[in-house]
Amino acid sequence: MPLIPIGTDVELRRPPIGNWVLIGLNVAVFVLVNGLEVPWVTNWLPPLDAAIPSLAGYLTYQFRHGDLAHLAGNMLFLWIFGHAVCDRMGSLNYVLFYLAAGVVAGVVFASSSENQLVGASGAIAGVTTAYLVLYPRSHITLLLWMFFVGTFQLPAMLLIVFKVILWDNVIAPSLDQNAAMSNVAYSAHLGGYAFGFLLALLLLLVRALPRNQFDLLALWGRSLRRSGFAGGAALGDLRAPRQIEVQELGSRPIETLELTPIERLREDILDRLSEHDYREAVRLYDELRAADPGHVLPRDQQLEVANQLAQGQRHGEAVEAYADFLRAYPGAAEASQVNLLVGLMCNRYLHDYARADQHLQQSLSGLTLESQRSLAEQELALARSRIAGTREP
Image (cartoon, rainbow, N blue to C red; front, side, top):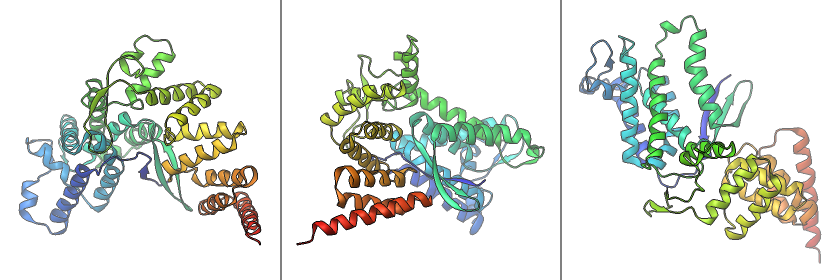
């Protein structure tokens, strides 16, 4: 079943210039070496020969690719995961991190092989697990290409850990009798994954990267705290009375400050949701909205709060929560169903027929179930008839 990652729900704060540069260099080298066959480029950027490795080879092999499919697959993953990591690290630090991951991947490969190695896979493996450490609660949009073409989303944790790392690089090769003859450098991939994961964790621990309440250390800390383990605060309990680093938006520098009341409310809401204490989560969400009307929770939690508001017959607040979800996560797999639900509530409970018309139209562009499309069309016709009725003299 072909599954191709095509995007994430991480919102970037600045252009990922460092990642664009790396992608551009990889493509340029491929064209010069494989397309134009420029001799001096081929000589200056040799593969890594594991039998007699050179120091330069640990860097140069990262920009060489065997064929167009090899390049395209690597650049797709670099585009998907690299943008967000570059955004968090900053372009220069990100490029250095990327090259270091490739060097470590090459060292791991050379320690167990005597073959030649080309490709950016080891470096991209490091970027992928760094993404997991920095954005563990994010979702990846996948393109499904089988008897039909469609998209859906999976949690990053599930996709990266179980599909990309364990299945593609550990389980599947162990089941394939021809894996030993394959030209895929699994050891380099695993070396890159380990490096990216451990270094990203270390950078968070020593505050070399800006912390927030949604990185992997913060999630571990909250989990340990809920289980009663005293070391939870040391790992990631951002409610502890201590200083944390946050990256402000725009051009403002990284500052050191106490957790703000908004951030405390946000974390408390996430904790209550994880404990299924929905009444308290909704109460805290009301406080959050009063303090910062434009604030949006992470994707799943925003949707969960909106659902709780709808179940509590608080239709006006539910519509606003769903609308915030749609504005923040327009590419979410649930967007069409959410638009349908908002249209229904505006039509039936709020009598806001113009808004119902807008959301019902948007829902029809993505609904695939005939029953849902039929319902949307019926409600849309009803909303338009009521709009026309209000315009009669």
